[in-house]
Image (tube, one colour):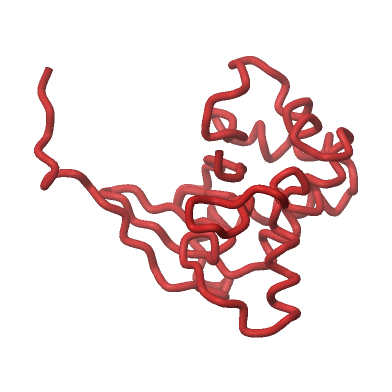
Length: 170
């Protein structure tokens, strides 16, 4: 077994928070718009189109808690507090309303929402604080991460427009 020395480990280079959507590459903006359009219908089933737009489905849990082949809409319903997907739709809208960060990991570039999940900073106002709490699943409200902060749900999209994940920290 060949192991790379720790000095060869690629670390993430994370931008400061970005609020200007015009700075997104066209493929990222396109899938973001498709996801938001699906959410605007109010029907969780509409998310099937942007989910299936990828060659591989986005991950909905870091831990691999869901078996391959499981229906993605059923997963999203299961993850939603109401079991119908309304919480999921609301979360996606709240997350995409936040600034994002650009993450460079070797040759890969990823765009992740919300920026405060990667770049924790105090909210500038009470309203901003409330907007951040809207990015936390109901089930995660009582749990905090290793730093004692809430576990916001994150969305990651690669520069080529592939939707990689929609998850909260495990």
